[in-house]
Image (cartoon, rainbow, N blue to C red; front, side):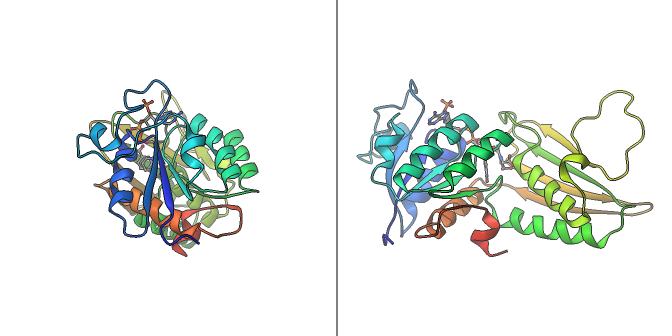
Length: 269
Ligand SMILES: NC(=O)C1=CN([C@@H]2O[C@H](COP(=O)(O)OP(=O)(O)OC[C@H]3O[C@@H](n4cnc5c(N)ncnc54)[C@H](OP(=O)(O)O)[C@@H]3O)[C@@H](O)[C@H]2O)C=CC1
Ligand SMILES: O=C(O)C1=N[C@H](C(=O)O)C[C@H](O)C1
């Protein structure tokens, strides 16, 4: 294994992309070897540091992921579902660890990632933070401990720019609750209530999404019974928690067997 793996950041100008660039640059056991943006983006051809309003780094932003990945051991990708799926074939060819934070992936997208993971290491999670991954385990335990009289609802809040709902984290928490309670997640899933919905169906898990301002990410798992309510909550106030998890995943993935892993594998939870 390389002592200091070379890392490429996809979507380098994004909210997560810029955070990831800073974290990789500051990491004592990583080297930033590439920064990729979409074709036509203003940053293409610019020095990455200058584009980020800082000192020059000598690294130019490219729109050619293949060129960027050629000499990398890891790619950290918080972009869009289309970009992530296309990239997975390139990372598999290059045998680079592909760390995926992108959410909003369809079942068909995930099947394509499974195919790429036959040849390369993919670590994917809708939330890379330690706190949320621990919360999934707690959610599973609480769902298993409480009887079916406790209705399960997941409420999430994010900034106004977020394009997918429910969030990837909400889905992780809902899946954990379904597993704990022995429910089929797809059958239990209820994501929208509007108008005359009828009374709440037993055995369902409801999802509600709030969008506004600059909320980084907040998630409640509510277990609502008769006369009492348990609320498990995670509040993210700094995107660095996601970036640090992603860096940990990129290091953990070095020299692993090909496979489609999660942050639970990385964190040993
Ligand atoms: N798993 C986790 O822990 C977390 C996951 N996320 C997820 O990460 C994703 C990104 O979030 P966020 O950073 O807020 O979003 P942004 O829109 O700020 O960033 C996405 C970046 O990807 C760029 N991009 C789009 N297409 C391509 C392409 N073909 N090649 C290279 N770059 C491309 C975008 O460029 P342009 O804007 O010009 O299109 C943009 O700069 C979302 O799915 C979000 O839900 C976010 C935080 C934590
Ligand atoms: O888009 C975001 O910002 C976030 N997305 C992830 C999600 O969909 O859960 C993780 C985090 O909540 C921030």
